[in-house]
Length: 247
Image (cartoon, rainbow, N blue to C red; front, side, top):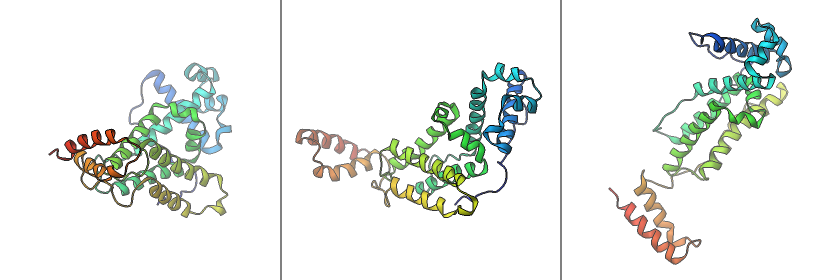
């Protein structure tokens, strides 16, 4: 279970070498904005304050980012990229349920370590256009796909991914919205385990990995299926028979 930190947002690691020219200046401005955001919240991130902190004139912010919202989008993208770097991808986890829990914990831990940045990242739906955000969701869909292939998934893959993402994000934002004397760390365990129960089966529905195992599992319950016509069931059984005997 993630341990709630105290104090300021954690500072994301800086690259060893800064990009040259314009990109170096952009990064300096983003770093200055993150520092102001961490210390004073979103209201502290004004174009003048960021320009002063970065050693620039305010018009430079508009040349680099278009406007303040463009700057905030760049800050959010930096956050999504930093979050992406914390993700661990195991293409063949020994225990896919524990892998799901670990991935959920990583998301919560990042949010607790970077509260102001996390809030900015997830405060507006438009942030989902971020390339790094989309890459992170692709990683989540890969994890969900492995659960589905192993017969562990209880929900449709898209709904499962939305549930996992929503509970992690909601856990952090709820924690941050509470007065400190009302923050109970059990919130995280409760939400995480509720998510696991909602998304996964206690036992895999498919015992054998691969198409053959899945086909045998589906063939076993096919007689109970009433949505398909008898002809459709017959055709589906033929396909499943071929898959089930595939070596």
